[in-house]
Length: 203
Image 1 (tube, one colour):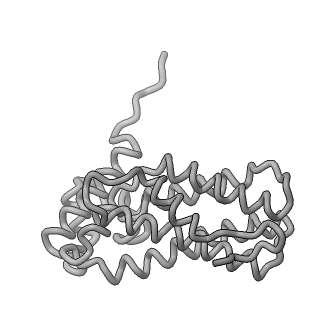
Image 2 (cartoon, helix red, strand yellow):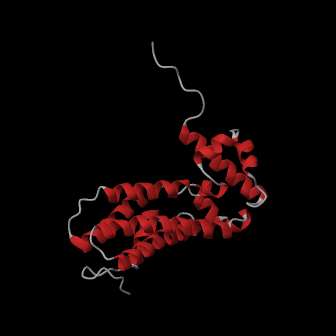
Image 3 (cartoon, rainbow, N blue to C red):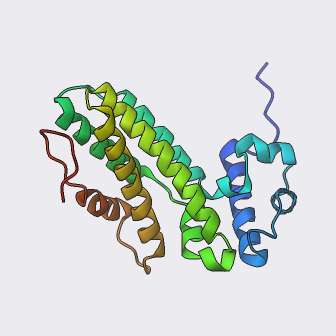
């Protein structure tokens, strides 16, 4: 006898429905005037289902980016560890570009492009800073494990994570047709030229 079929929407589909419902409501009513109850009602899911995916309504804008940071952490955890400090910096860049190529920016692109109509400009800045902090900590942790001193590791982690978020914001607001996101990310990372000898950013 086969296993019983699971009832309900697939996890990815439920999350997408919540994201779409949130964006629709933010555009219609504004971010501040939209409650979690409004989103769940529009999406046709329970409050428990909502909190199974995200802790706050603003996090629905960032699910793809949060997935990307998870992927970056996994990539760096599996890095081969060769090449010293310069190799570690190169690993970070390569891993971030791979993650960027696989990224489906989703709702955060709509939010950046429509920040004023949605009323999310301030919230985006605050929540972007949290993502930068987390990605920066992931990168800095990798660099420290590879022998980079704490100060340059933290500076580079913050700078590289910031370049990723700036590239995403820039790309989201660019007119259509846009260049591929990895191209914008690559140009942002190119600003952060790094010496192989001391691991410090150089203008």
